[in-house]
Structures are given as C-alpha cells and as structure tokens.
Image 1 (cartoon, rainbow, N blue to C red):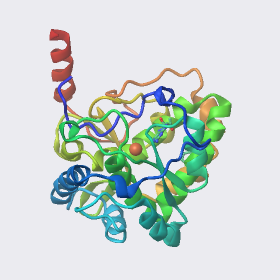
Image 2 (cartoon, rainbow, N blue to C red):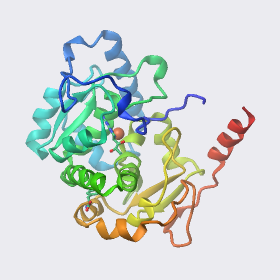
Image 3 (cartoon, protein in one colour):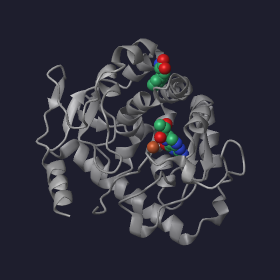
Image 4 (cartoon, rainbow, N blue to C red):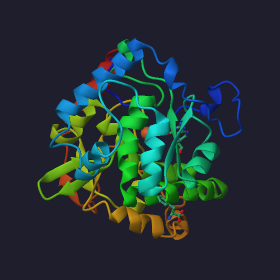
Length: 299
Ligand SMILES: C[C@H](O)[C@H](O)[C@H]1CNc2nc(N)[nH]c(=O)c2N1
Ligand SMILES: N[C@@H](Cc1ccccc1)C(=O)O
Ligand SMILES: [Fe+2]
C-alpha cells in the first residue's frame, strides 16, 4: 500500500511485543539516549505540523500546546511534561515500548497516566506508522490532556474500558474512542476544527479530514458511532463532528450499559455508510477510497 501520512495503526495486537520488565509495561524514557537524528526527525514532523495546523487544530489543542514544554528542537522529556500536566489536570505521561495490552492501557488511563511510545519513527517512515510513536502520542494526544474536559473524558474512558472488557463489548467502546479522541472534529464559530490526535499528528490527514470532498462529515451520535466500523490503515471514510467538546463530558457520564444492550445483535455500519437518520454536514463523494479500492483491485 502506498505510504501515505496515516498516523498510526492502533489495531495491532499488543501481544507481538516481547515480555515487559514491569507489570504495567512502563519503561524509562531514556531521554538522554535519543540521538541527534531522532531529535531531527521530531523537528521535521513538528515544523511540518506547526506550519499546517493554525486554522485547522481546535483552540483547546493550540492552548494546550502553548502551555507545555513541547518545541521543535527536541523530543520532549516526559518528566517535564508530567510536571506541567500534573499541576493542570492531574495527568502524567509514562513511557511504554509501543502498543500495550488493552487492560494495561485502560488501567493507566483510569489512573490519569498516559502511556506514550518512547520511540520515534525513522525518516523513511515519516508518513506511515504501524504503532503510536512519541510524535503521535506526545504531539497528538498530550496537548488535549491539558483541557479539563478531555482530561476527565479520557480517564472515564479508561474506567469504561475496564468495564467494557468485562462485558465483552470492547470493540464497541473502542469505536467511540476512535471517532473522538483519535479522529474527532469539532465545530467552532470560525469553522470545523480538529481535536483527534490521529488527525492532528498526520500531515495529509489534517488536510484530508477538513478540505477533501471525499469523506463524510456527520454529527456525533453515540449509538450510531458504536455500530460504525473504522479504518486502521488509511484515512477515515467518515468523520464525526461535535458541536462542542463539552459533549464528551456528557458521554463520560452516560451509563453505556443500556446503549450496549440497545445495539446488541444490531448489524454494524460500514465506515463509509450515510444513514437517513444522520445529521449530515458533508456527504462525501468517496472518490479517495474508491480510487484506493480500484488500486487494490488492480494489484
Ligand atoms: C482498544 C484499545 O483501547 C486500543 O487498541 C489500545 C490498545 N493498546 C494501546 N497501547 C498504546 N500504547 N497506545 C494505544 O493507543 C493503545 N490503544
Ligand atoms: N460512560 C461510559 C464510559 C466512557 C467514558 C468516556 C468515554 C467513553 C466511555 C460507560 O458507562 O461505560
Ligand atoms: Fe493515539
């Protein structure tokens, strides 16, 4: 598949990582061990997004970024990020080797610890990544953790994730995370803006999600999103839009049990489906994914 600026693939089973030293899979970031080339890759990625995101990233992302020790020249030191985050929203950033098992991931989130990949992609991987690296996790996710609403939402997601696992409905909950925290859009007075980390850490998807006529843009609805499959290896076919980030707090406080029950045995929707019950902001023309399917069919 042609390398495009897909942010990260979260669907990998974490089991393919070797056994961890610690039960919670955390490691030392080893900030002093980063090479000049690794800092240079960070700089390339950072500067590319810094030029592109004004007018695209939501105000909360910009405010969070400004308040954190995150700059162009160096991969941030998680200890310094945690000092600032702890004061604002009680969060800290802990280093992990890459994807970790779901229950480990949720346990960290439920305790306001954000597991961030310690490694950075290689220069030839600039536009495609198998696992969340430090650029996706720190540049994409951490600034939003400075916002009290998101900070509460992601902790609640961790708690909900542990519950969803016990209920056997993790796949449904993962869709809510995917279409909000990873690939969410939000309305602002001055237009649609990005809050999803998977978009904001991706050069081409930051453009595609807002400007391209191909994807659908649909008002967020919980049960609808829970039934909607997502793409892990390419741009999303649909983006779900919040009227305001505060909607996420309502989500965090809704008991999902009745919703899990209501959609049980209901068929999934495909990523590109548009329903007549949808609040459609943009009905996409689907040309991007049609072209990709044609490419693949021609292989
Ligand atoms: C569904 C589940 O929450 C999701 O795939 C998790 C699994 N493990 C992870 N591990 C890390 N380090 N980062 C992640 O975003 C995730 N995502
Ligand atoms: N409120 C959800 C948990 C959750 C919180 C935040 C985001 C998504 C889900 C539940 O009852 O399980
Ligand atoms: Fe992510």
